Image (cartoon, rainbow, N blue to C red; front, side, top):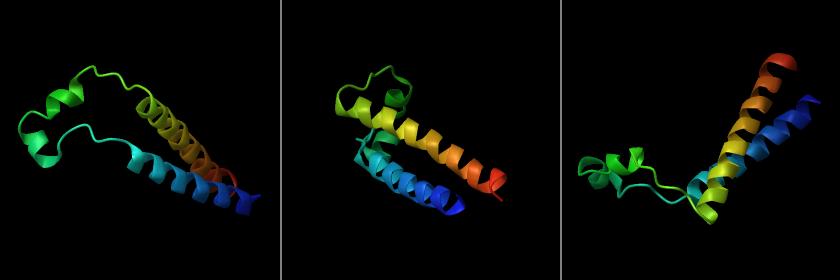
Length: 77
């Protein structure tokens, strides 16, 4: 059981990294952060299409990662 949880945790981590890297950036790097990129951070821009799917999938994999890490660290040990 412990080995299965660790394998699922590793697979989930790889999928989460891939999903994060596939997402588009919200600002134009450091120059965007200095010259007003923070306005986009607090703005109400809705994600659509593939960005919405990537956003939701990242949340799901993040929650799954937390649950598996908790299960691995506290319940199985």
